[in-house]
Length: 174
Image 1 (tube, helix red, strand yellow):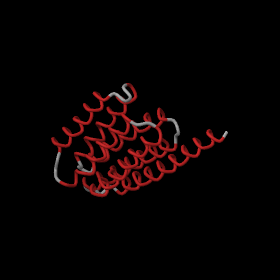
Image 2 (image 1 turned 60 degrees about the vertical axis):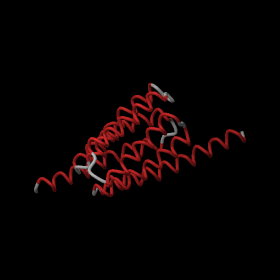
Image 3 (image 1 turned 90 degrees about the horizontal axis):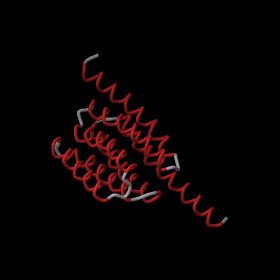
Image 4 (image 1 turned 135 degrees about the vertical axis):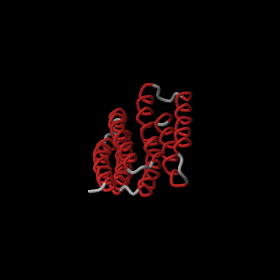
């Protein structure tokens, strides 16, 4: 098998690992568990995008690992959030190849704001919007597994938001 074929297969395999981690993360109602699992999933996504030579998406996915660690330590910290937003833009500028990089940049910016400034359902709304951007980025990179992963992440995230809303109603009624 030639190098491109092997790289493509490895990218798809790594994306399936990320898929499994993300599905477990987004079915959790606990924000802390969500963050830890997303940390590991984004290591896999960064590797997947590198294998597909989608450098902005790879760089932003790698930066998301740092963002998740920082948001756990500095929640709702505007200065740290702004630093991460600037770092996201800087990574995009350094690795930019054209319009196909816009969805990854949008996903990075939406996810950064959502994780730092929001909690519960509002945070998951921002992360769902970011997931749709990642779907587009995966499609543009040619990642079948990543596209499926982000589509399922979006769907799982929406279902979890409905579960959280239902739980809140039950607490108010009880």
